[in-house]
Image 1 (cartoon, one colour):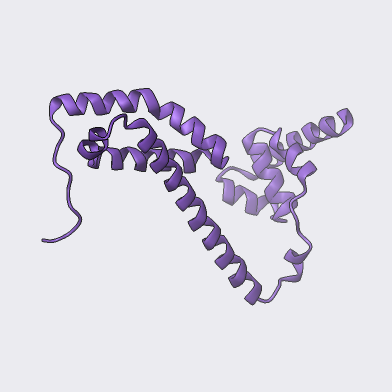
Image 2 (image 1 turned 90 degrees about the horizontal axis):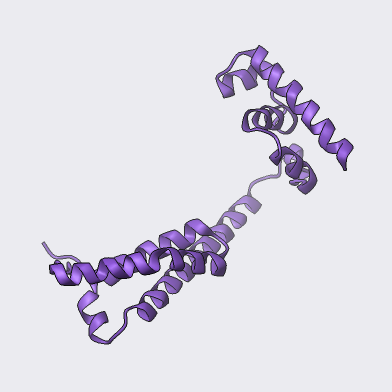
Length: 172
């Protein structure tokens, strides 16, 4: 079967050296890429791919000297590739959305930073109930089914959310 070349396994000394590089660089590299791309998950994925490439090419990379610069270059390139792919997918999605007739209910909706900020201060269940009630316009019965809790529990979460939101509004 033909396919991509598979790297030969590293001997124990090479594996120990590779592991030292991973231990020394993994967290620093994720932090660096997170600062570059402002996306920790993208950074972690790029770093993982860079380490895989380093493992596959260990012999040729280390023959040229310190593997760290090579590792960083590959990680940054992977992050750039991921960001580029995401941007392309986002543009495609935007083009597709433009071809769909607008729903009059959704046209005027825009995330409101203040409201989102206030909601973010609520516990998860209260925030979920409030968002489904006020943003999705679901009934208490529908929210109960979505959250898999009783209608009484939904009413309790909504009441607590309203009280917390009132305090937040009064404080501002």
